[in-house]
Length: 407
Image 1 (cartoon, helix red, strand yellow):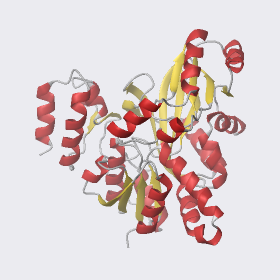
Image 2 (tube, rainbow, N blue to C red; image 1 turned 60 degrees about the vertical axis):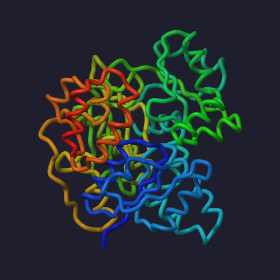
Image 3 (spheres, one colour; image 1 turned 180 degrees about the vertical axis):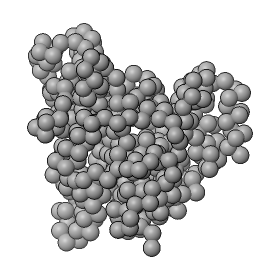
Image 4 (tube, rainbow, N blue to C red; image 1 turned 90 degrees about the vertical axis):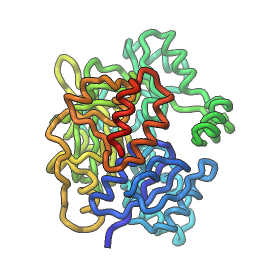
């Protein structure tokens, strides 16, 4: 009997659909709890979807878990992770009645002691430093006096990051104290009600509603900037041990603080060391991402943050030890690992639709592997049709050819 994986999503992220396809291809039965209209519902990989309601998130997740009885939950965005943490706390207070849900969440995410750590950037960085992992100085701040002290000690440029943010949101690179002060005030402030309402009505994303209504202020962290190239790791892990891993150098990004659009597969001993140390220290399970900076002069890898959920490259099958869905299937089924054939011999991966939407004339669409899900034409057409109007500079001929190939 196939093991069942429940994908938990609160954001309409395209890579979530790719992850569902990869898990189904690995041998899992895949279901999802997600917002209405999520692209994962357009794939043939997902057997059933359950509606995520932003104003009742824990009830949405609990109802899906009760209906599916999954072997594993895989959150695809940070808000989904926070919901699972809160659901764990709620079910633990119920005693025996909540034991099954608590056990499932522990099996899916790892030891509960890790939950507060992955939510707090500065705390995570301190633990990494204790494990001998190379990290830049990172401090949580609450006042302008704290900010001024960090600026005097770290110098510029600095990076300001708010806890609970993801996908490049809540990150500011600042080069003067004036920029730092403006960024601090903006990152710490509760979301404007108008912004929360727009996100809820237009994007059907209600995650900002409660912080806006309750005027919830965010914790801001200051991190010393590392001059160099960005890199990222994604790993599948089980009870504190790594099962499979992917390490990439970032070649192109959507914008300065946004997600990657083109990556190069690499081997890096320091990145592997950091991943192993932190997965073991926190007792993690499931899929996580780690972001790094490769310092310009030395090439040293500095760990800069954790993404405690599946990232946009987790679906890629790139050879022995580099197939995360196959590794997860083996862990939850008890069967041996059955890795898929490597999808490409190229080490350069152009992520669809990100690089195509950013620059349809990009050289990487030809020189690298363009990761288009040709087997799911509805997914391609929906992505192209939804996003094309939001961006400028997309060549009509390129759009037509891509849609034609999806038929």
